[in-house]
Amino acid sequence: MALECWLSDLSELETVISEDAGWRYIRMTCDTASKELLDAYTCFVEEISPNIEPYSDFFNKKLMDSPYLSQLDKEKYKIYIRRVKNDLELFREENIPLMTKLSVEEQKYASLSGAMTIQYKGKDLTLQQASVYLQEEDRIVREEVYRLIQTRRGQNTKEFDELFNNLLALRFQIAHNAGFTNFRDYKCKAMGRFDYSIMDCFDFHNAIQREFIPLIRLADEDRKKQIQVTDLRPWDMEVDTEHKKPLSPFSDGEDLIKKAILCFHRVRPYYGECLREMKKMGRFDLESRKGKAPGGYNYPLNESGIPFVFMNSVGTHRDLVTMVHEGGHAIHAFLTNDLELAAFKNYPSEVAELASMSMELISMEHWDVFFSNPDDLRRARKEQLEKIIRILPWIAVVDKFQHWVYENVNHSIEQRDVAWIRILKEFSSSVVDYSGLESFRTHSWHNQLHIFEVPFYYIEYGIAQLGALSIWRNYKNNPKKALDAYEAALKLGYTKSIPEIYAAAGIRFDFSKDYIHELMVFVTEEYQRL
Figure (cartoon, rainbow, N blue to C red):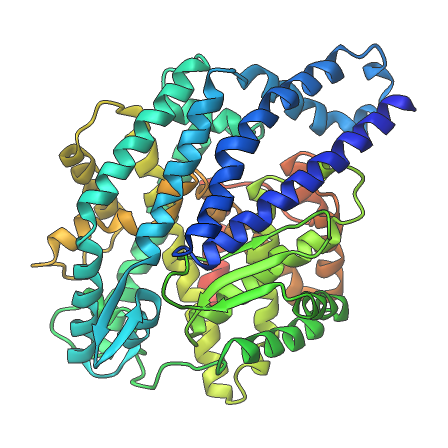
């Protein structure tokens, strides 16, 4: 059919352009200090992308006006057509220069964060490298480094606040131009949240608060007793409660890749082959260094079919988790390579994060690759489950804060800080003592890059975490059946709705109080076994 051939040609063009944009972004984040790389990325954002947008709108209209549209396979193209209609409804030509300016502004966060270092014991350390000292047994060292890190972050408080104010103004104007009263409502539509509502997000916040905060309070009290301190302080949260040295799952970036390949091979040989092909193609940049953007990501490169994994490893257990998380994204990219259109591979975050967070838990059954000592393996698994218990409330905090920010458009910096602290306390146990550290805590939202760079992209981690726990529960009961379902779901890309994709994985798309309680009981039981 001629229309399908036209869609295929359009998809090929989109794929080539997106890969070029991808490499510009990757190279820029690998070296934020390079003016040449920054200029190349900025050139795409400011000069190329704005000229593409009108054509994208034109092609969308051409598709919807085609007399042959009704002859397309309705089941095959239903999600694609839904997204095209959504894009048409949101498109405003006057927003093109605003979005260009917004993209440039958002990248300033990476430059500010990437330049942060501290001096400790005669060494110039990135904040990621310095954070390793927060696991030291010596409490004086932990406090010293914690204060150095927070003080360094505080030096850019004014810049972060001013940057965010600029982002707010641009985002509001874009939303207003598209006919929305606030950016939150605009963004939820732009993100294609067809399968759940804003009220569902609020229900998620409330359920997490009810189900997880009592558990965190008990965990904090237990930590306080185990490390034998009168007051539990923020620099006490990373040290091992059994007074053992920090876990050291790998020696350097090369060792991390080698062990990750073996671990993934044990889950399924194909997964190991995927990572091995990435290594062969030079698609990893793993180690932290000065000038490198913060965070970690997997960037799908659909033209070549081989994704790129970026992270800031310093040899910690958390780095291992990041590696298997991004590796899960990479496997997802490989599994969707055969889908016909680029749009079919542009799956929503709730599905993307299901792939990665499920891999964290599935791979955990094979972490003996990283930990030959059975006690270290037990500690690693315990830390992973404790991380889940703690991350869900943090996700709720970040998401609820953003709802407040964009619902209260004319707020001041002071009002924003007050709102952050109020929401943070709602999801904290109150066991950790922050006395004398109020300024650090007030500005702790500056550490969350999603708030600056990808607004509202965070609750997806929570939704996907619930799904991942369900997949892991299935995996423990029947590994082959669970992996087959996991793969079947990921291979769908975005050709089905989110609930349908979750159903294909053998789980429910559900974040109700009862479901969260059910999964919390499962996690608690697994945690207690360790």
